[in-house]
Picture (tube, rainbow, N blue to C red):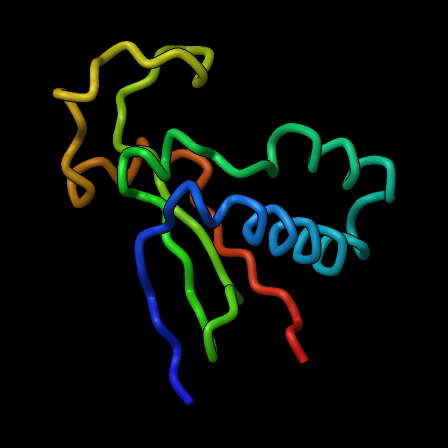
Length: 112
């Protein structure tokens, strides 16, 4: 029994959506209303396909099942944090852009 860390792919999207939703509902229940959690799942807590495409979103698997996920942004973003101001060729080095890390998260859900 061991955990495996690997880069996420577009094929992981459905499993990641389920994992993120289970995590948000389970971990957020003490601090947020059900309406707030469901609202966040419609936007902020979604799967970020740009991170997957950039190779900066990862999946943790246990016995072949996704049990965790997370990533960080390597692109330089403007004030809205949604429109890149630099093209793919200008990706930041991960170790030098800690302050610019965006939407970094780890979602762990009970899988028993």
